[in-house]
Length: 397
Image 1 (cartoon, rainbow, N blue to C red):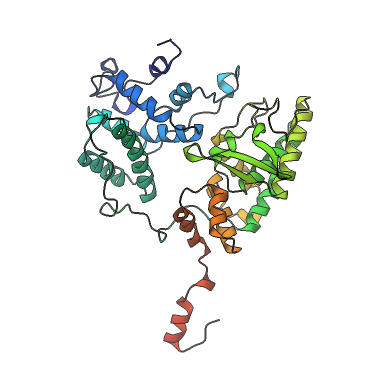
Image 2 (tube, one colour; image 1 turned 90 degrees about the vertical axis):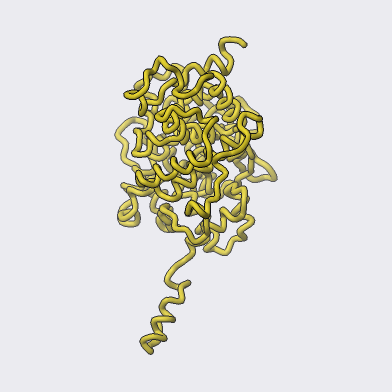
């Protein structure tokens, strides 16, 4: 196999997770694994089946693998060629669950992940619970683990999936009645964010470019896009079909869908691309099937590189903090998924057909879209006041 092949890239994977460094000699290789190269190749085979870069990164990070290794494996370039290291987006800081990512947890016990049993997976879940991991976090981490072992089962590496557990018994079954930690943004709050983005403070000579980019980012996220989908878009993904501007979005599982641009999003995006081309001294067509813009990011850094999801998250937080009273109570909790969440809840409030909303946001199952429907719960849709009125003998307001 040539040096540039996957196995050569796999050598970049740290052989010992940082959490286990005090107990395990790094020279010993992957703790508890007799054939670390084989395990790395199996992980690579699993990740390579996902076409979406964001999905690969999310799965790799959730299991305790370095995102940079995943990018190198799949040929993704997280920063434009020639960008100084100091200009690259910094990695996310390790959180309180960092040491409990599955591969790190296994390494700390000298356990070959391929030899893990259901009992060990349950012990891991209990450790997550004891450390304070929320139910949704444990659901998500178990789902990622199940996807990995599902692949190993299909390829004959392991005889059965140890993560295929009874979630109801573990208290991890999902219900439309489950509460969500995601804040619920109203249409008025989204409008306030768009106005704040247009006047985002910036003292550089590129103030207009940055302001238009901020408006475009907020505008595009009001279409219900995932942040990974947004940062993965190229200018070539913006096309005209049936006389309408459309984004061809690569979603989860490598499934593409067409997202129609609203007038709001189209105007914001057009203004941004025109200013970007003017600033760069180019005239790349913004909307034409296959063009010279094929691999140019739709939303770019000042130097023309691809924005990261961390860039978008930081930008939204800045916008929310400058949006005034409308966002005063929730500005610190605004993140990209909150806008996607708002798209679904507002659409359902406006009596949009749930099948249409499902297609818009790329939910594989309508049950996922229905899960958002609990956002329609208001004081006007509860019988609590009627019950209280019956008890007190008064009329509800």
